[in-house]
Amino acid sequence: MEENTKIREELLQAVNGLSDEQVNAHPEDGRWSIIQVLEHLFLMERAVTKGIADTLASDESNRVDDKPIQYTLNRDVKVDAPPFVIPSEKFQTLAEVKAKLASSRKALEKVLFQVKENDLEEKSFPHPLFKDLSLKQWIPFVGLHEKRHLLQIEELKAKLKKLSQ
Image 1 (cartoon, rainbow, N blue to C red):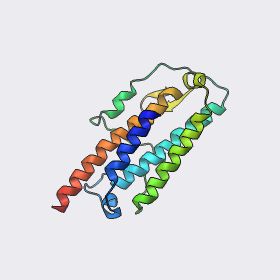
Image 2: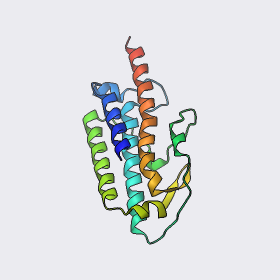
Image 3: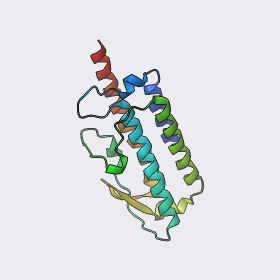
Image 4: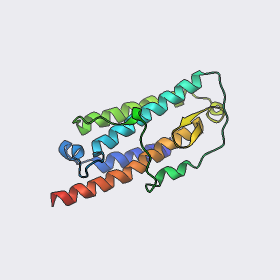
């Protein structure tokens, strides 16, 4: 979780100083705004937390081999988000979405605080791209996923800057 914390700090730093209008703007047709990217990250972390909690609560074990989750950072490979992590179109303030992100992180940390190390390796649940992913790998995946979208936010900020010139 230490690496996830660093990435979250970078993510929040990247949006500091942006106005609510800027984070809700769509510099490119058909692409998410910065606020939608942030909401997507909240929805994803919440879904992962629920998946981990539900898997831990079950009696089933399903040990799986490690997957190449570092490929999450490859932005050349486009992945359609599952419906349950697609952000809304509504105007949201940066403060609202930062609070959502804080709550999803707190929930994830609470679930992980109670986990047995062995369960992280012995239990898994499906990922849309990597198929069954161990709970142990789901934890760094959250950070890698945020890092992927941090790159997207930087691209969106650059496009916003061009549009304002």
